[in-house]
Length: 315
Ligand code: ASP
Image 1 (spheres, rainbow, N blue to C red):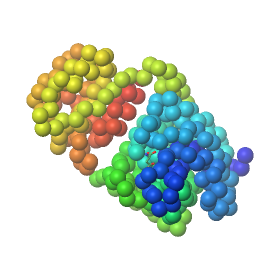
Image 2 (cartoon, helix red, strand yellow; image 1 turned 30 degrees about the vertical axis):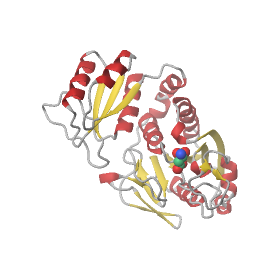
Image 3 (cartoon, helix red, strand yellow; image 1 turned 90 degrees about the horizontal axis):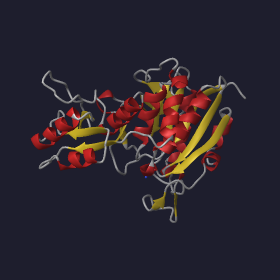
Image 4 (cartoon, rainbow, N blue to C red; image 1 turned 90 degrees about the vertical axis):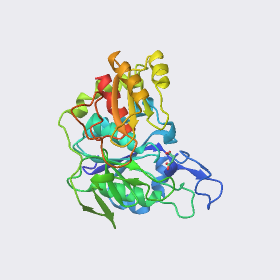
């Protein structure tokens, strides 16, 4: 293989979506177009060095599953271990992109770049955004010194721990919250503002056992709950009765909880269920106090805290 290979793994999403009408940007079916075909729409990619492709999955990312994550993590690990692979790009739906990005970073902490990219408009749109996003993602994967799992969309590079879908429709739907983006891609060049996600030596090799567990049926059940006006404890009791192993609660504000919900969560915690307190606010983080009876999510959003807890329970 060429020493500067980029591997593009297809998983589906709107970037691979098809609509019956070119001016329909929402009434489409996601995950229809193969990754090879997506590349064919970008002739300049072939001029920029060797690009290999593999279709790992073809799903609307709202339906993302542990089985797909296990397969994806296995293929990403495989390619990361190849000395002639410079970086990996993953085409993905926007809906759960932040969960997949965080999952891969938490699991693999790679020393090479793993760049997730996506689109808000289907491939058949009058003016699709996917081709430029894919081109920008490859530019980031080729950038000397790039490392870790990042997302590239609308010319913005977000770190896996910070990226969050914050808009339902705009072509630039992601935010990195308080952290801000890692950088911007402008005409194929990266203007970097802050550091890459941290790499950890040996993590890719060490992840093999976790990947195998994810592929099995024994994935721990961790659910996300939300605090809100009138919240009670019944949902906690129902989940406890079903054998839930972990609960992440999206608290209000600084992780605050309705006293009835909190009482139920404390009982669940005393019974051995792992409970974590995040916030339903999209920015900021839960600031711990010495009086906290339920641990906070260490700055992670509820869905990312859930991924973290699943990985902890698997370990
Ligand atoms: N439902 C789509 C998905 O996440 C949305 C998108 O890709 O923008 O796969």
